[in-house]
Structure formats: structure tokens, C-alpha cells
Length: 142
Image 1 (cartoon, rainbow, N blue to C red):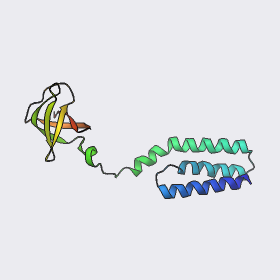
Image 2 (image 1 turned 180 degrees about the vertical axis):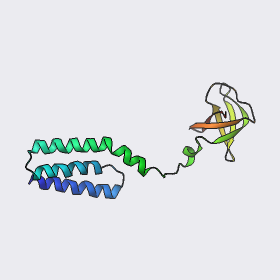
Image 3 (image 1 turned 120 degrees about the vertical axis):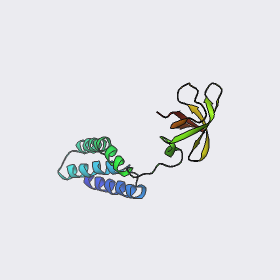
């Protein structure tokens, strides 16, 4: 009878995974499948629960990062995330102390600040390191 419970849990977890497509419950479905097999072989309930937890955690820890890497391989960065690594031109001298500085990135003006506390003169080519709020954090292109 307990084996039927594992089979029902497996089905529920697979349905949730199909609906969400987020690779969240598939690992526990694997644990439920192995626990179901242990139940069929006559394993004690405590053993089934331990196997379910152990297999689920192991699958989650060891296979999820690999699966996420392959699933997100072709994801295009958009908006602010796509600016990292872009080249820009300083159109207003960047001075963190005074809080001044602007750059042009892909034809758009952005407020900017230097990664390090140094002044970057107008006309300098810089590289966008990250974006903090509405300011591009830049460093001089080498």
C-alpha cells in the first residue's frame, strides 16, 4: 500500500514539473521513483523515506547545476544585463567625489561612475563593469 503512495507522489511531482517547467520538482520525482522501487522490493518504511530524501538531495545537488547550465546556454541577456562588457565613450568627465559623469552606450546616455576612485576625462573609451541603479560603473579600456 505504501508503494502506491510513492507512485501517486511521483505522478503529482511530474505533473507539477510539466506545468511549471522550472526544474524544481523533477529531482524529488526521481527520489519518489527510487523509494517506490524500494517499497516494491519490501524495504521498511523508514528505509523508503531515507532513500527518497537521499536520492532527491543528491539529484538536486549534483545534476541540477549541470541541467541549468545546459538549459540557460542560449538565453540572451537583455536590458541592463546586456550592458556588462560593452564599450562606452565618456561625454562628461567622471568624478566620483563630485558625483559627475556621463557615458554613451549604444547611442544612449547613461550616468556613470568610475569603478575606482579616479577621474576619467571626457572622450575616454571605457568598459561597463556593471550597472548600479541608474549608473553605469565603468573602468578605462586597456
